[in-house]
Length: 230
Image (cartoon, rainbow, N blue to C red; front, side):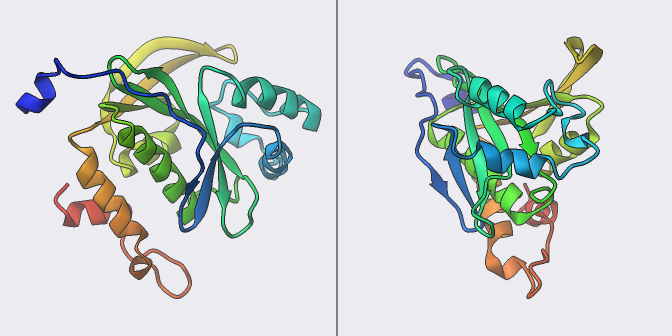
């Protein structure tokens, strides 16, 4: 660990994430300030007939539109988390959310979580770019540590954390009770000294030259990192 990382006498509390939208190439990130995207999200979520997108979430599936809108108003517009809508450029409609949450400004720690993506957004360039832009927002604000936590049984979320460059730190056993079940929570993190190289790898992966005429990736994000010796 460098001296800059250990000598923090001049460190000041970081600002909380704001409400400014972020424009990407494939997606627009819109922090929630009102209810206008709620119906789009509900329509996207209900295309998952099995309800699997809610399997490891503390909420859902929802019995009807009004129950979702009530939940979204309480949750997405609350004061304790900054929720962001992911709006793919291809549709102009919100089809996923992610939050910057559990902010600890005094210590420069924040978490990206509460990620819920409609089937149409999963495993797309829009979802990868969207989460990257939200991660970048945290480090642009000067946070020292970005966390990712998930149910230890949630293998897709664990794989996503590793794909994005988060480092596994361990599992908190019997950490929570979710929907009447025990949850062991896997913890991952990125720290500020790791971020510049990771940001460069995201930018290299998102380069249009990394996609063929059909929009398929040529190199995986993990392969880009490996080639950059990250």
